[in-house]
Amino acid sequence: MIEMTGINKYYIVDQEKIHVLKDISLTINEQEFVAIMGPSGSGKSTLINTISFLDGDFEGTYRFNQENSYRFKDEKLSALRNESVGFVFQAFQLIDNNTVMENVALPLLYGGMKQRKTKPLVMAALEKVGIADKYNKLPKQLSGGQQQRVAIARAIVGNPKFIVADEPTGALDSKTSDEIMYLFKHLNEEEKVTILMVTHDPDAAAQCERIITVKDGELLKDGEAFAY
Image: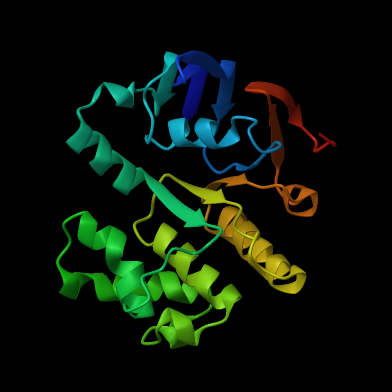
């Protein structure tokens, strides 16, 4: 599904050219559950932004479903991102004044769906993450784990090609983290959702099928987790 070949990326900082991604070549198939690990400043966020159609300023080749999607203009690329990628963040990024149902419906509304048509899809997504009974609650009325479940429902409601989860257990206690990882594994194994998870947590990474480690802009290892 995702094929990167010879990806190099640079930033200009105070007139100095910084080499952020160094000759990255990587393939990710449908239905994989992949952890991306690395220390702060390693380039993993830049890598995931490139994969997610958020940053196309690079050298090399990136093909998504055998197509160079970055050739599209901004509007079409934005539509592709909304249709193809579901995002889950460490800080949940829910809208405080919107109900659970309204938060989960947002990707559908951005895609042009009429609001009245979103309810069955939203309820199906909430059912998958185990909080359908919370549909009319506000985020502040939920626990951290429940808020992350809302964020995951929002990520999957549009049936994206893959989910990007950026430190999804980083703000949670260990018990809740285990529950969220169990949910991700269920979505991957039973719903066949492709998941790319950025994490510092080796215990969370160990539950993925595959671990990619990034350091100083390079892929150090593709396989088992190891200390960095």
